[in-house]
Length: 197
Image (cartoon, rainbow, N blue to C red; front, top):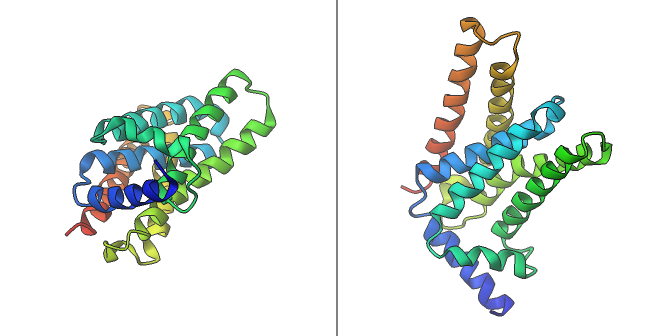
């Protein structure tokens, strides 16, 4: 497959996929954003397993959504920086690799920095990727990437509250945190569906 053919396939795939992105893709975007938020927040060292689990589940969800499973290999077998989904594929792979390595080397400070940088990429990528789909003008406004950043950080902060033993079992803290997680997912779904009408 030539680079030109690959680019055409990627662009066609984005146009086609944008017509049937459903709750599974909203869930994948939610999990990836949650992982990215956890990776940039100060407690990333304590939550890296949660980040890794969220990313692994997001990747599995996305893989199951694909019609032709082998197509994912082309993102890693070619150099296509002009294709937004190419960046997303590499962000996923590098983030999982860094988090897994950091789990084995918890005292490596440079892995903390690498995780934070990749987490920022995971937070920023979905909004910019959606905004670049020319066939979906509803996703073009500047608030799309901004909203994805806010939702990622908000969901990560809410999960931190639920994981904190000081707040566990306290309804005054856990109920709002769970509600924020649900709202963050629902808002992503609404944004995703609003551009497909």
